[in-house]
Image (cartoon, rainbow, N blue to C red; front, side, top):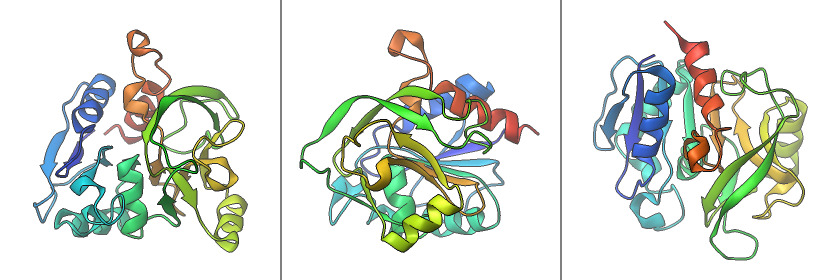
Length: 222
């Protein structure tokens, strides 16, 4: 599997994502600086967590205008899978690959802790390693993770089974419908606020996140 991690000024989980990808696939991903304008042939693109451009304007807004994003969007629309984690999820909404927006957390406080997630879809390339409705623990670390979409968009997401992960119980950040992860219409673009790359070893507190990367390797093996 040929994967790439896009690195923006302020990314701080790019190495974590690379370690998770290499652990799952046995192959180090390419690390692509945001100023690049074209990407090589790839099986997977990852937009990592962090605080791109210091979250000026709003999380992901400036990164969505980076030169590399034109080709990321083009490749996503051509069918290349894209995974956006935390800040990467924000970038995906800002560039139009996913609907909705990530707003300030409900209590206006940075959140950093493990949360329980329900796997709402177990038939996507990202989630095939989980059981339907399985409860897993994955860490969150964000200031703007409050997912918002209008009622019509939420009905569309729910009706098309495009919610990949949902917070169990009350969403810690106030997200509508407890949404923690969303798929695009093709099922090949996933944005999620929790950090699966921080949950790939029991020594780190849990390994539930590893199965997401293993799912991708299995689905995209070539």
